[in-house]
Amino acid sequence: MAHPFRYIVCLLPASLIAVVVGCSSTPAAPPEEAPKVSVQHPQARTLTNVEEFNGWLQPDKTVEVRARVRGHIQKVHFKDGDIVKEGQPLFTLDPRPFESDLASAKEKYEVYKSQKEAMVKEEARLRELEKKGGASKRQVEKAEADVKSLEAQMRASEVDIERAKLDLEYSQIKAEISGKIGQALLTKGNLVNAGGSDPLLTTIVSIDPIRLAFNIDERSLNRYAQLLGAEGKTITETLTNLEKAKATVEFALDGETKLHPGLLVFADNKIDPATGTLPVYALVKNPGGKFLAGARARVRIPIGKAYEAWLIPEAAILADQSKRYVLIVDDKNVVRRRDVTPGKLTSDGMRAIEPVDRPAEGERMQDWWVIVDNLQRARISYPVDPQKTK
Image 1 (tube, rainbow, N blue to C red):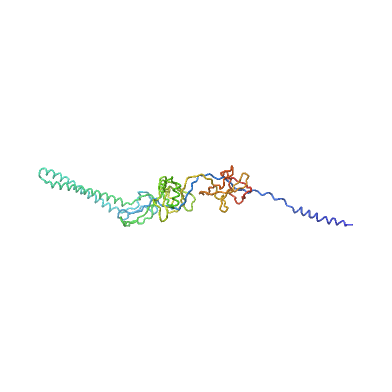
Image 2 (image 1 turned 180 degrees about the vertical axis):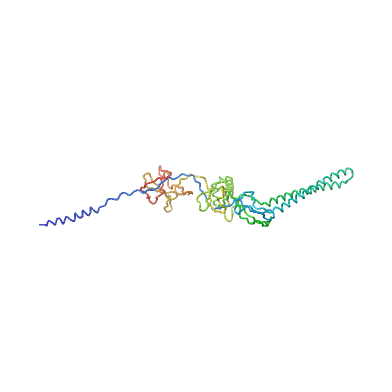
């Protein structure tokens, strides 16, 4: 007969197993939440393709200030670096020698004038005497010639007076243009000469407008003319038309992202054979002198006609070897891939795109919800929680 505890012992392992199994069971994991991503529609804009060149700013006008007469500098009327106006006095030369020359020329004129008046009376007297036989014809002719000679000397004296006046005026050296003046290279007490050895006194550069100079290479020039010129027009005719129309260019200084406008006003009449480029410049408004001559700039010239484009943030475009694509969210909030061809990049970080493949029936690119943020959390064919932005 079997022992009664045998059945109990046999039953204990099964009970213990059941308890252990029941204690070790865990609840099922909750479903994973769809990641949140930012999405937006492509933006519609009118764009124009551009060519970019290296350029620099330079004064539109530069004047070297030199003396026109010989004299000692009596006074300097400006401080180095001043802004001067056209006609403003810059240097004064000692005026006394010029005042003396002017007075002498006037006195000489008065002498000739008095002599002429006396000779005119003498000629008239001799003509009366000639009628009565008291004077010869030769005497009359000599008196007439003396009158004409004195008239010529008076005219020469008038020229000397005007020259002396001009020299006196030139003793006051004035600004020929408005702009920023440089350093005074000669100061009070120095002797200046006029002529071949005349020293440079200072320079003035114009401020507003300022010139934006750059060079267009020959290849770009041909492409530029083909795109902008009417059919049958030569490069010269195209550039001339652009100058007359004052075509708009844009530029940014080193380290800047903001673009500034300028007007194309000049293209040289020949290509430099050493560099294969054509010198060109535009004029830029420069109130207050915010742009300084010598600064380097990146110049953009519009190429071709304006066109409509759809733009998205540059950061939303992904790369897969040689292909570029974007991730979009469909009507079921599932991520889809669309291959695109990138176009022009704008100054605010937006990139124009074109779809590589023809959109599916009923699908329009402007209706795409493009993922622009949290791209690393989006997986193709998996759902996301799109946060729509403008």
